[in-house]
Image (cartoon, rainbow, N blue to C red; front, side, top):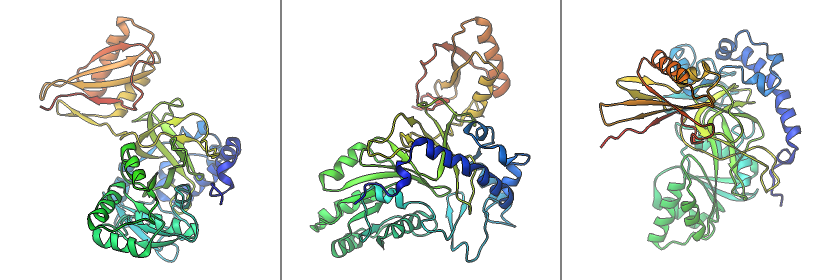
Length: 415
């Protein structure tokens, strides 16, 4: 029984990178031709020249709020805002809605959301029954997992959400090999089963997503005989990364190009620095190019001990959209980035907002080797010009700011 889903997982990093970059210009050209949204967003871009990560990094990032705005603006003519490369009919069996609402198409390709890889890494194998407790209505989570399980050769019980006692009964009678869903609902089911005096010995593994899965809860499941693994996926992109038996970060999926950029910008950060996950998918039905997830993470060094050679990330580390209201005005991470770009002497920056209610104070902390008062005054002027607010400047040594992806820190007291 192979511990790897396919041979793609053990390619050399150079082979994988070459394959991804070879597919990239074709995907960009396809997005320009088949998606009216990307025909606009990437107007003037020669897809043939986007053959490296440096070239990719020069393209604009499209963030979720922009996708929603385009969908809302064009809803009368197309529900997808011009992002989908296919239309209603046999080629699009289902449409889903995420909060916003943002509408997402589902194509006909086997394992459309590419979840089989994560399900396999969680220990599931062909011929097993999976109890799927992700929602089957509105959002695509239930379908994402079911189509992946089918591609793996598994049978699925579509448990969905709620009806805890019935979930326990179905598990006891059908004896599934494991559970797929949120960690919190699995905990509720296990506790309800204990309360009912119903043993669930067949449930020994779980693939968990959509919520935080802290080590304390992982250990709680292990004490009850359930090995839980997490994966990171979105309704727009499908699978992005998944946990393995090594439990050392999440391994990137084989069919996405992932960048970590400084929040509020499209600029890649040095390896290991926390930033926003930006993903380019090779999905031809919904070809998202440099899609900003709004989630923070960082690249881990080295390869996974399980032999999988794809890049690993730390997992979900918070939200990148740190927009904060100061003295009645919104301050955005992009404004901090705009200030930093004016001064090559500045390596990194962090805007700290402090003070009690109605007494906001802003301090721009900047990493730099230059300590002249002239630079500080110039930075203060730039803060006022860009944000329309007064703020102080504090010079700090390179490497002293926390590596947590925060560009704006709200340290105010609301007591």
